[in-house]
Image 1 (cartoon, rainbow, N blue to C red):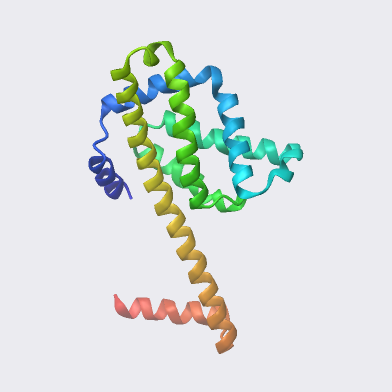
Image 2: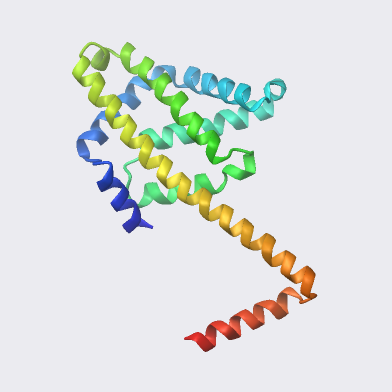
Length: 193
């Protein structure tokens, strides 16, 4: 996985300068993080047609926690091995909270707009158009890296789910037990090697 992710980093031309810019943006966000999270949550729920759930305090808290983990993880990420492992675990759990990859794409765009406003209002970024531009370019790179990683995890989770469904169907049609199937598959794998 890391070899693949290293290629993605190279492809988007991620470097330490980008990391410094993202860290500065993260510091600008500190004072408005809660408002950004609430806004993202509201927009996402509206898009998914689930506004009625916003009266459920536990749902709202869980949604905000997931959005916070996503956003802070993105902006605190160093895009190293540890980052990949944390994001892998995070992306693997998205299905449990009914967030799909399409929702992450929407979040990417909503987040970019929210963080652009934050960056414009930040004293150390918003006053200098060049700094603002290069910071937003670094944010684009970070979002693309994160999206590629999350997509690969979602794809793997989807493929595993499809494999499970097909296996269940095969077992139901043939009448094989799961144990018999696994023993046959294990024997086949041993004879190949």
